[in-house]
Image 1 (cartoon, helix red, strand yellow):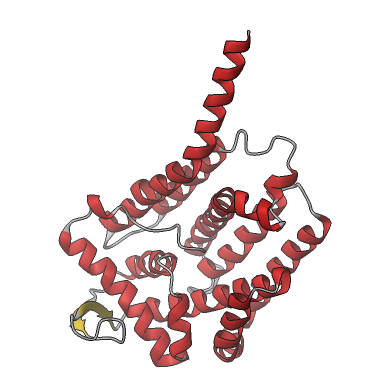
Image 2 (cartoon, helix red, strand yellow):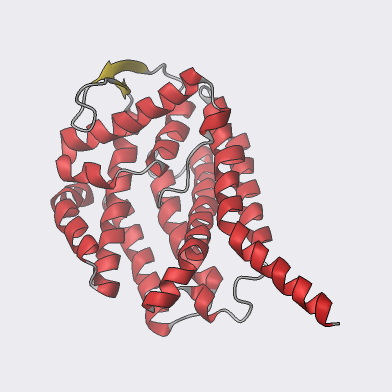
Length: 288
C-alpha cells in the first residue's frame, strides 16, 4: 500500500477526523515504541485503514488522548492507545515498506531504497519471526513481480495479482486466516491490492517511461485505455466486502475512505488520461 487509501477530509466531522488522526499517531508511536524510530519515517495512511477495519470488528471503544511527539513537540495530537489492531497494522506496514525499499534498491539502485532497507532491516527480521506466514507470502508475491519485471511482461492482470496476494495475506492473518470473516477480509485485501497496484502504475507511468522502469502499462497493447471501469469495479468490490463485515464502530470513517477518499484518488489519477482521450477523440472527429 502506497498512500492512496485515505479519506476525504472535507466530508468528515471534526470528531471523526480527530479519531482518524488518533489512529495514525497511534500507529506511528507503536512503531517507535516496539520497532525503532526509523520505521516511523515510512508511515502511510494506508495502515490506518487496515487498523480501523480490524478494530471495527471488535467494537471495543478506543482510548484517545492528546500527546506530544518528535514531529509535534509543542502541539499535542490525539493519539489512540490500547488497540491491538494498531500494533498489527504497524507491523504489516513495516513488512510491506521493507519490501518496497528492497525492490527500489534492486531495480534502480535507489539511494532512498537503500536507506529505507537499512532502516527497516532489523525490524523486518523481528517481524519475520513473529509473522513467518505473512512474510513468506509477501516474499513470494514480490518474487513473482520481479519475474514479470525481468520479462518486461505486458500482463497487467498478473502484475496486479502479485499485489493482490500480498495484501490479502496482510488482511487475513490477524484472525487466523481460516474463518468466514477471514474470507471476506481476503476478498477485501485482494481487491484493495489490485486497486493500489493499478492506480500506482497509472500515477507513475510518465516517470517510469522517463527513467526506463518497469510498468506493465508501457508494454500493454491498449496502453492506458479501458482502465477506468477496472478501477471503479475494484472499488465496488471493496465496498461490497466492507458491507459484508460486521462493522461495530467507526462505520462513517470507513465509508468515507472507501466511497469518497479512494474514489477521489481514482478520479484524480485518471483525469489526465481521460483528458488525453477526449483530446484524441476531438482531433479524430475534426479530421473526418
